[in-house]
Image 1 (cartoon, one colour):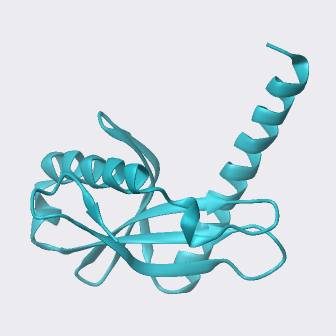
Image 2: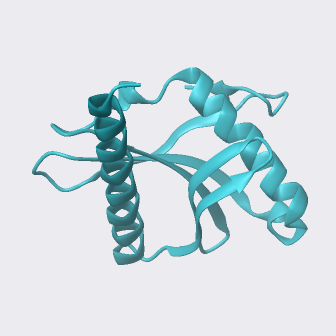
Length: 131
């Protein structure tokens, strides 16, 4: 493994972490309560789990140097987040009665982060995502 690739991966990791922190701050400023940040489940990582009223939000954060686009979230990633959310709900039964939503926050570039509410839904089998 070359030194450059290790260095660029470290830079991408730090950039992603920064984007997740910015996204959490955006949610807080919008009145959400961030419950978990970078939550690891047996099915994958959930960038942010937030709550607003009776709505539980699972957030995928995408950061790109020049600004991220909605196409940055691939269907396989969305399906992984759906499965991770299932694990979360199984471990936290009080949230099962809440409305569930899957959001995306796009960060990077010079503009304000873009919050896309209800970017997808869980399919009827609750294992895949519908855009």
